Image (cartoon, rainbow, N blue to C red; front, side):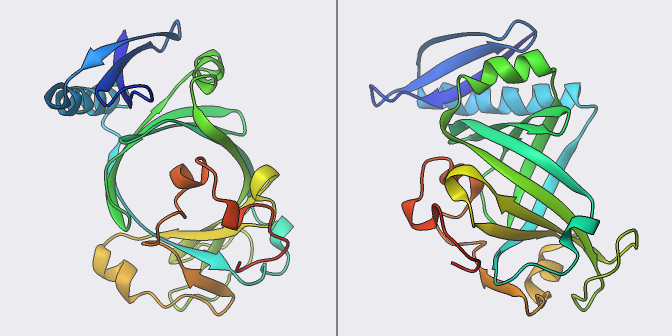
Length: 227
């Protein structure tokens, strides 16, 4: 089974097709047109949609910097995440979350965008990791339930929302993001964040994970929160 993965050529202005065999992790390339780029991107989405048994979602999410960490952070469930980007336009990401591995294609947008996700094998992840552009991000993600008013709940409780708190390591040591997914765009816009949240960076250039992988010197190696 082959997946067409699309990527801009760094040597020429034209677009380049990369065919990835997920089972064998074999990558090759050839020149391609802009019209074909769009057509094959749709093929990527369809392939992942079918293989993932229809796991296509509309991601509605806001992102904030964090002024201070909540108390008892280590008592909440957490995962260690590594993620890299095969392409930034379109966004094609691979991720290792503890012992699980994923290939994800994201649509355009900031607050709202489509997301297609597929589980892959470890050996596929390891091969694709060598094809990633830029920095491979490393972070610990804590899942923290909150009520409708943004109050943090005790571990194990079920809240209206869940904060995914990302504490970065490596190049972005000291950077902390808080992300919350919502059911509707109106709900996302009307949400009032907790006081310990910092600036809303959902729509700001340079703050997406894909952009961080390109290297954002203003956010690198910060000692503290909120930036």
